Length: 288
Image (cartoon, rainbow, N blue to C red):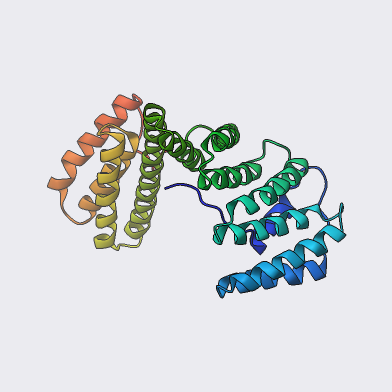
């Protein structure tokens, strides 16, 4: 899945107001705000031609207030640009997004993650016009910004890798494209694994809560689920596996199933001893 252009929303504007690192941005002009709100409403009603007229009116109002309301100018530029994009008028939309990008770079700095989104918008416009040589360096720049801001394993980095891989594919640079798609896949698999481990940790915590309330059937189910996930992704000798085993063994003891509890206790103790000699049972999931 590749990143697509979206129009700025009121939530987008609120985020921009909060992101300015230098000094607080002034609040939007009421007349402009009324117009931009109407644009949002018209877009939701799929009245795109009327929305384009109102978006252009908002740009006129915002430009009359410069330089104090440059963020409003950028928002209107992107509203008009997004509506032109939806109409397939990519060449007309491109310079509007370029003007908006220049404002964001000045307001937030050239290496802000918010700027990376705007750079990606312009790259997508070039891609739609089959101007791959112009799109490629922009996608590379957006990727570099996101890697620096988020680290190499973030979801946004995976999206940028997909964007750049697509450009390589469209230029028949298949080897480069494959490398980036593979790296993106690795990141997404890692994110999925981390998500499943977080679910397992919550299952273990909830199992402990149910156990404390003598809700043994619900507790056992959650202990079993957490144990299966921890074993799958962390291996058989991780402390989190021991925590699930210990909880399940306690439950077996409590419900008069000592024969079933004993091998779990022995296995948990062996894990604890291997990981940290002399270590005691924890009953709480650790970070993987």
